[in-house]
Length: 438
Image (tube, rainbow, N blue to C red):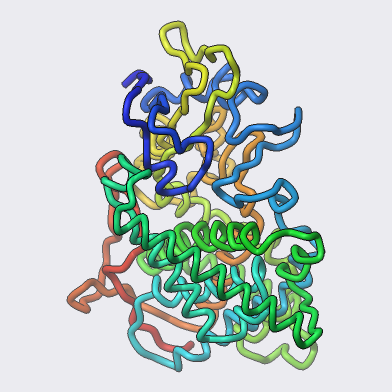
């Protein structure tokens, strides 16, 4: 299907999902691009018109494009965590994940998405929020309920009529209010006691950032984490459970990683304990097999529209018969490339080998793998997202043997094969794991 221009009521999903001020108008025009990837991702395509089509206004030259609907708020809040910040956060991240897995006991049946969502919430509020929320189970539960309320607040009516005070829209607004008052109480308690935190909240407060802007940052990070990272992590464990070859490769890689970094006193310790000594560099550059598995899971899991707005006064030509008008928003459905059989052989099959050098299907063209964004607009949370996905999967695999169960608690042998058009992955709530400590 060729791109076409839609005008009229506007695309409320952008506001309903992401809350971007640029697209709140009832009269926005939308260009929807689906089909031939060479049209929207060619050398002269939309994603290279950096000065004319942007995600948000007021950006400078060659600076990577910002996104207020990923981390909304002032530009100073948009920078991703630095190497120093992530390295310092690593020990506590490992402790947090390990504590959740400790609480599972030595055997049982669990819904992986529910556990992983809770882990993601804790890692996110600690990294982008404050230690009080990371340490206090009640505050973490409140943060989780806030993002659940927001995530469940989507309906067709909210997309089409985002300016109407519909119940689902009002519930999402109330979630923001609850998060604001939670942070306000924490800030006031710090002011009263003179306590200073060594966390993101304190850093932002010292810059004079308002609590409202900080709420936007935390809300955006929570939404991205629970909606994306939790889903990817759950589906990663799902597919590994039905593929003994790749599971064995991942385990062998983790054994080697643990042995390399284990302290002298832990050389004979369980793998799950050895992995707690792995530094940031190890998790980021020494798990290539796990990285391939994550990459393939993202290809199948991330089926959503990418959005850009033409903020210039001129139309942007995509092809001789196709343009993005001034003020229009372009949508591109990622499955048009990520699930395209002309790019990926058997795209419905989970197959990390497709990225190995002898196949390199993701290198067959420009922008054919766009799981973390593409061009000069990669996801700003990419590094943190990769890190938490690797840590969660590795520590779970190191600790447990597990089988995939369906809703009737029967063992699943064949994994789900999604349709590239009719099916969009959601958080996997309809399966469970039967697990036992190794």
